[in-house]
Amino acid sequence: MAQFSYKARRRSGEIVQGVLDVVDRAAALLQIEKMGLFPVVVDAMKGGAAPVPAAAAERSNGGGRSSLANLLPLAVRQAMNRQRKPKLQELATYTQQLANLLQAGMPLTVALNSMTHLESKGISSEISKQLKQDVMEGKGLSEAMRKQPLIFSDLYVNMVRAGEQSGALVDVLRRLASHYERFAEVQSKFGAALIYPAIVMSVGVVIVIFFMTFMLPKFLTIFQGLRIPLPWATRFLIGLSNGFSSYWWVLILVVIAIVVLWQRFKATEDGKRKIDEWKMSAPVLGKVIRLNIFGQFARTLSTLLVNGVPVLTALQITEQIVPNRVVKEAIAKTRDAVTDGKSLALPLAQSKIFPQLMIDLIKIGEETGDVPGALKNVAETYENELSIALRVMTNLIEPALIIVMAVMVGFLLFSVLSAMFSITANINR
Image 1: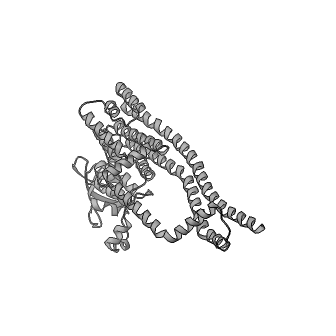
Image 2: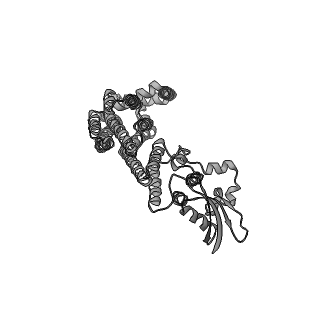
Image 3: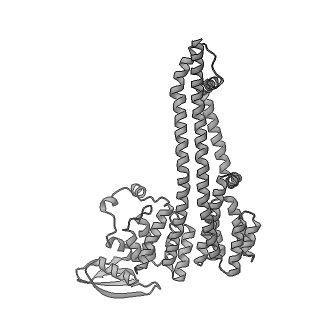
């Protein structure tokens, strides 16, 4: 055992000093953090060890990079450490891990230090190291997270701030993890609903391209060598093939022009709003999109309100998160109306965007004093309806695509076989 003298700072800013009997400097730093202090200087009383400032604590705990990594050019190191935006499930896992460590009784800095060693897919250890460093310098966790906007959204930061102020940070983190897990589940349902139709469509396109490119030219060689009247379907197919062969560049130009015009349209605010309107009013897909947006709105607003975020701030954050511009405008008008002292249900109803069921449930929540609970019920209702709507959409799309592919392939086969039958009939004569 060795003795280490230390200077550390309380959360309030007060400097304290003391002596620890521990095995080494890393153990001293860990002990100081367990005491809820922020180490400033840790000095071995024997052996002449150099003081260790708080900024070096991470290296003393064994978290430093190897000297070989430090010899790499700065641009290379930055490229290696470049952080992408994490997926919802990855953020949920990270949040749950942090909540579990805090629930186990670890001080925040110790928990963040442990997060640098835990495997968190999608979120690099550098994020946890930076959070720990900021917290050790006296910043709150929410303030430290605000410096990482790629990882932690306004929703996340505001909820963590509410948890810090109320002293229920662990509960808030668990709610956040549950919140992102639900949204990740909805995303996965969307993806799963589109996998089978995409496969059917891809297979059909490949079959048509293969037939038009490799099979049809061989039959055309046979047909052109015979002076026999061909059926209309075969003539149409031959004309189509010749048109593609002679004017393929026109087709490419048309496709490029359409893409450019579409991108220009999407780049304008009016275009973006129109596209969002079309999405919401589409025959089958529109219902799925509306249910997803309304469920997302209710779930986000409920999560913020239940954690003590003021209603105007909660509406502003929800407005930023909702992807549809039509709904964004409705939320903005609702926020302005709430500022004027109106209830939440009345301006939502006046927007004529939100469904009557949501408005009625929110009105009941306002009367009973439990708006977050009412919004939670709304979210669960629409999430359940979304699951049903996705199944219905999938059940409609699958046979529709199969019929379209069958008609296309069947027409190709009919065109060739009818020509073969015509040739055979003329030869027999």
